[in-house]
Image (cartoon, rainbow, N blue to C red):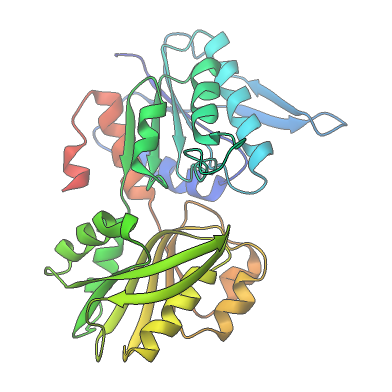
Length: 321
């Protein structure tokens, strides 16, 4: 892989694109970086229209697009951008999807359900994507759906750096379900091997969770709830209430992807959560930006470093340490 690097963006998260682009432009390791001239517009019926106005033949192309709301439109736009680059004879195409939004149906839980994560992976491959860079996939096994290299980055170093700036005293890392234990353990190691508590929750239907038990000591501790996403916020709100009842002094929630759908913002304001820290994998609307309980940390340095390492053929193992 020795082509020049071109970086493109869809319309879903242009603010994050500019942050990453700034870091790529300033990097002393990149001497062959070029911001690509890509025009995205719409036909009169709303159909996406893609125009790449640079010669990318033989180049390495990286396309940034979060498949957040509206998921279908953003995913279609990404696939059309990939197809345009493929038909322009790009040497390689990497889909950089900070928030992979078609990942929650990763297996059949009931009859006659799709496995949307597998379908999305096939579509990306068919469109021409050779590689995927993503962040905190909803389920790590989703990597197996892609017939090519996948770099699933973790936001926990960024969260750990933010928490370490505070003098929180006695803390406990809380995972909202047993499936997130590895994620919580990775954060706990970075926070001086903090203890871990696990929530025993049951889902009666999608986006509805009930807390049954707390496994671990949370009394008189600063509880840090760690999850990959916050959607309707029902889970973290119920868990926060249970933690306070169990004697936690304060509750912080760290969630990589801020979906924040429905009445999530209003419910968060009334909840027992003291602070919600999210990343910029999904752009927040004005109401979310104005919420005094929400704080945003950027994943731009992490993604920029992953792009540089991928382009230069270097190991990205250091990003996981």
